[in-house]
Length: 334
Image (tube, rainbow, N blue to C red; front, side, top):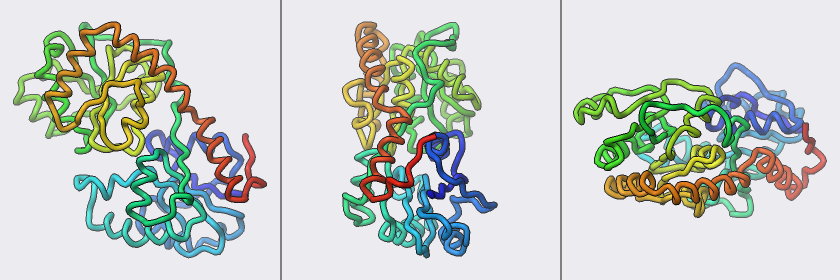
């Protein structure tokens, strides 16, 4: 039987990936009091006797037993902690270049979520391409084109984001304020404001134009997507970029970046911009806000593209990988 590291299960990112897979596949969940994100976790797993009683250890994250007699599969969603200095640290660099490098070499296989991430894993860890399986990501059930729509007294652009530097929020706010559309619209971010953005918004005197939702549920997020004139996701770096396909699934047009995985995920169904160029972002905002036919066209293309990104398809790719690896006898759907 497969032992699945269910400590990763949560609401966002790796946690969402873990939950959706675990809910669909018959696997034994692995629990203990240690966090899987700890740099010491691979060593602790090495001395866990429970792991050796299963056929295979499957981690939806970047951890696995450093010493193991049983095969294991780990999942590397991106190399954000290596490729983006603002998200890196000395400890993270050491972990990736030593512990994770060893885990990759010794693993039965590595799962990842995009061709972009696969290329980076090959380049950084020097593992054979055939060892890496792109299983993708899916859109959860709440994200549909019909349902409640959020509304304000003006149209708004919606940005699913957090306050991390690679999300490019400073450039986006400046680009929005310099657009013609900002005169009659709001820019809405998920999450809570931080001091950096508070200072920026205050210096621009646009406190009434930029809104932060605070913490919201997936159902609430879907209502924000549906109510938006379009969504915008000008990130500098993504291993996948789930907000792109969430917006597609809600029928909402998208502006996103032309770097890393985002062109791969968006295809022809979004407007692509250079995330370094405030002018390009600003122009895209004005073009899409003024062109209702373009918005309709992108909405239809996005709905079609969203059909490629379902959790059932992700699980099917995982099952196919297990078959190719010779472990098809362990696969059971719930």
